[in-house]
Amino acid sequence: MLIVGSQEATEAIRYMSFAPLIAGMRELTTTILWAADQKKAPLVGLLVGLICSAIAAYHLTAIPGFGYAGVAISAFILEITSLLWNALIIQKRCKGAFPVMTLLAYLTFLASIGFLNVPFENFLFYIGIESRTMQSLGSMLFFIGCIALFLLLRFWGRGSFRRYR
Image (cartoon, rainbow, N blue to C red; front, top):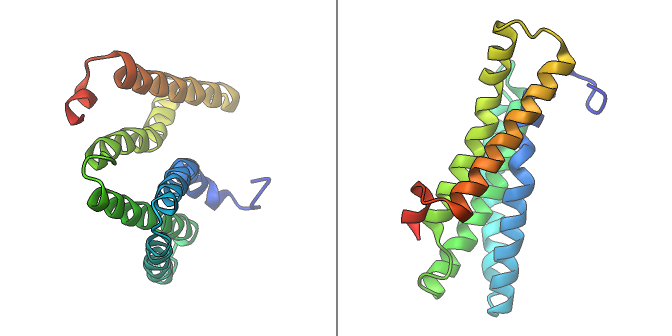
């Protein structure tokens, strides 16, 4: 509310919390391609991402009540499309250098945390925690717990992520 001036943007901003992760991965793959003397591939991927993002923004923001979410989704599409383009070029150039399936599994797990946060907040309200401060604290602890679970599965566990290696 303080930044945008509208309560409608809350969900869109929440879903964009993973955009820095995707943007960082895109930047990493761009740097890898530049180091491999593939300077045009990231530019082409970014242009394809821009086109997909513009098409998505044009159609999604026109849906009534979907304006802010449409903008967030279109920005996410830009980053995802560019990342996938770069990943495919790296995978084609160096077989096994960029484990696409492993990264997709990690990304799916991490993105599900954002989508599970809203039902968790509803559950907190259902069990009688009506204080907004306590709900925020509960959501933060839920997020930290999910990230800790991810780290355990990734680095120490023998969980389902290991089979993608």
